[in-house]
Length: 250
Image (cartoon, rainbow, N blue to C red; front, side, top):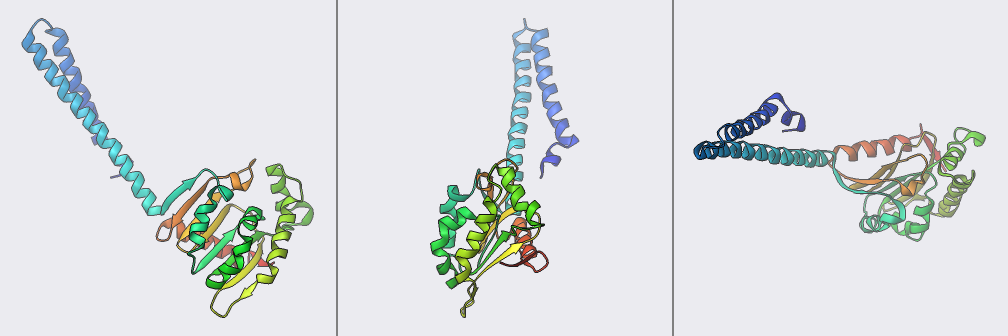
């Protein structure tokens, strides 16, 4: 049963009935307050209505909680954080040490990611397919690029993101390529408007919005698991941007 069903006319009628029972009991007490039997009857009636009202409200609260839990399960949401980056690095590390299939990440310059994990890149590619998407620093053109606009939104120097992207590409160039065991390391530059930060590690995907006026690492982040609706949508989002239509090798 969902919240809309709980607030249906039938449920509202039940609540109204309990309120009327309480009112009836209160009227009996007020009219025949000098008659002990009437007071006892009125008190009993009002108490019955009160118990019914409390029971219905308790039922409503539990059903709302059940509906919320069902929604979280359907969408596959298993955790939420008020920011990402270094603040939840341990969440990343726990999964990265066990990754055996996919390590996919999309961001702007991923400077914090590079600083935190650069020493582990070569290990990851030994046992997983590592794919990294960075914003093309010259898209749609150098003088009016999205990277430069984002720097302005975050209150950073106009070339900050561009320099981070170039640094990332330069530092990882020697790692790029496929290995015979199926592992690989690849970096591409995407040419589309960034909407989400996505970081898939096998069966879990971290994701969060880009918000104006704050740096990416300070934005909320959520985790969705494989099997939920969000996981597949976010993976499809990454795959679409990874395609030749929206990105090219760095």
